Image 1 (cartoon, rainbow, N blue to C red):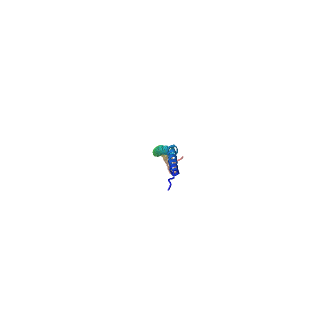
Image 2: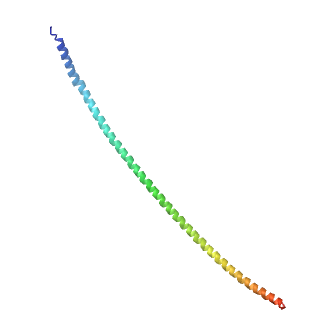
Image 3: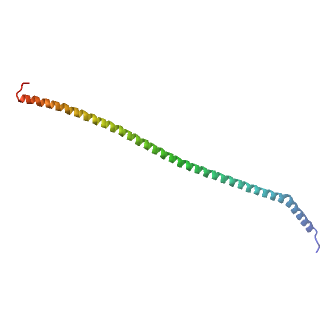
Length: 140
């Protein structure tokens, strides 16, 4: 059995190629992939933080909107109450005015009725006197 040195040469070339490929190709590619993974992780963290901020701001805006709606509802209710009170005041004032006018009209009618009664009583007495005089035969 002869020892073939070509196998050693092939193994030496293989290992030399492996070392060169590992140092100049695989090492830089792996370094670049690690850096890329690091950048992706950093970008993902930045994105997650930004997303969390956006969600927090959205929630904050929703709370402000909710508070604004509650405040608007309270103001609307207050304005309705004020309008109802103003309406009730106006109705009360109108009733008072109407009652005053009605009392004045009733008083006026009562006064006119009393005056008409007095006038009728005077006429009735005069008429009774004239009838009595005619019945008694007195000349008119």
